[in-house]
Length: 313
Image (cartoon, rainbow, N blue to C red):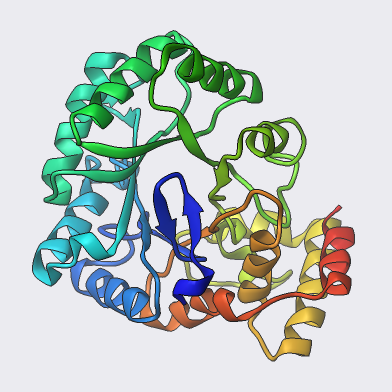
């Protein structure tokens, strides 16, 4: 799979980023370790988490996913073989991008991850109460200290992203090398247009989240079906829309032609889009992983990409 790795700043990442939101939530530590082992065995090296995962679960306070990943890294002794991405700014006790918040949050993440550096550190949500120069200086300090290798942004407007990149260039600060947008076949306007234009203009790699629309694009959520999943509410809202039905039909057509899963096709469509380096998708169980890893072996034809473009328009 190494030949298909893509550059992300100074990093090199596999075609699928494994989402860590389920670790310590719907996947316990043993399940999580099994999924992580299989992901790496399948050629993956890019693991995505956040300090806030999974504070939304009753009884959890955030940091659960990082802790599971940290325990896995320590037990497998493979830290240098994987690219670890985490995020700052959404943890209830450490919200926002004030420099002191970033400084406290990174140390807490490093402790949970049981490592002395984070490969890719995202600002999880923009904090417009803080000047871009302020938080970029704080992030630059982390890079200079060796705590962070590269920085990236998620949930940011095109205008603030442009402003951040201009500030980094002007002041000689660490600059964003990647962007994590909400982007998939049933949610294209959340990235395409102004935001994607900024990414393309400045050479940023896009690492889309909700790549499978909370599971909808796996094809298992269809009108009138019931699926036992913590995420079914998010997925089912697409099932009864015209676009949702058109996209599923197109996914089925392309999947049949390749003897592939709809999820693999949906990820391959994302991977083929300009600027996209690696879509993020999570697997709660081992059985969900093969369809995700198969992205590295599926190249869609121009006609298939057009079919999916038109169905999702």
